[in-house]
Length: 317
Image (cartoon, rainbow, N blue to C red; front, side, top):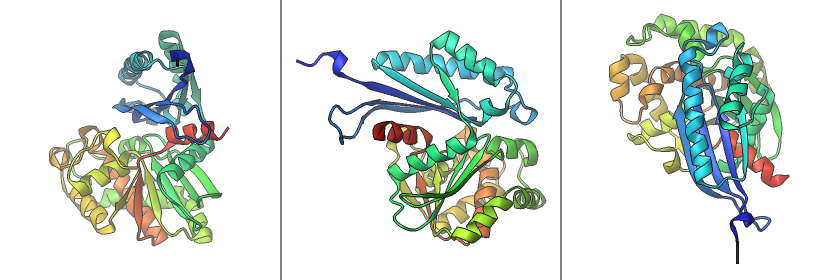
């Protein structure tokens, strides 16, 4: 007879600058078997809101983080989890009170958070995307737009040729370029953001020139939203297929409607999460910029990212 102790249940937590993700899986007892997902959920915490551009986590965001992790902790206990792996990225990497939040999380929930550098984040994102998207033998450009940082990786199914993390996440771009929240992003502001990206992303441009990736694969967040817009409906995390073909025409259409609408109109667009409505504008400008410099015509979205990469790594160990 099997007892509860035979089960190895793992909780993977990704504390992003915009969204906190929780994945609970039952680990296989037979080598080679796949883990069974028991829960896949996320919460819009907006950890970077009101502070990341000043190098702090604002009090409201700090409180939301603790509140969200208390909720995650309940789910973890409910599912009889035996092991927890929690990683934090840009917002906790660069803010002066990030270490304090890590300590408070541990004191209040017992969850130990590991703050990882951008290069490690890129590696894990690549490992996650490989679980969702068959990359084959050609190089692809992988991209994950977080709230604080953006990771770019050029890789095929076996090799990472180049990777870099840039602190130009959607919350930062929002703080820097976006007008009043109810406003429309003017052509001049779009041009200003693209000019800024042209400077900051010089290393990416050189890498694209060198490796000539054949497609763009976008992970999580903004790309999930664009896939939802293509479908015309907002899906829960658990409903997303591992990967989706995002038609170039669909991206162009979404981009045009995002740019030409104000906040209320954006929120009303089918498939948009209200928390992401404004971020999606600056993120789309970034995606458009990347398509422009690379000449890439094929886009796929990956529902898997950092936490699935961590899981893949643990299974391989």
